Amino acid sequence: MTLRICPVGDRILVRPDVPLDKTPGGIILPDQAKTPPRRGVVLAVGPGRLRDDGETRVPMELQGGERILFDRWAGTDIDVGGEELKIMREADVMALDEG
Image (cartoon, rainbow, N blue to C red; front, top):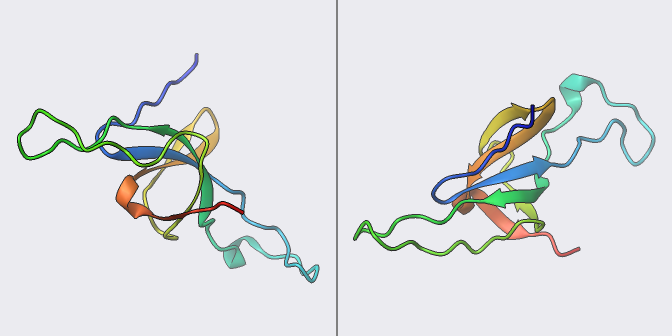
């Protein structure tokens, strides 16, 4: 069974980067020391937030495939087919990762 997730409103679906298992110096990190990822890839975007008139929408700035930086605790973690993803509001995104 294929599960298809389509964000609503101004929400986006993100695949966070995998946390590092060791430091650049080669020290292996235990699970408690790993920090949650703060970068990821946008997989899907919603149609945008409804304006106050209830009929028109504010267009989304993000698109699928863009790499982003977000707050460490932003969004809600969900499990989709064994993969950990996040659903968050577009406003939780701090910057595009163009590097």
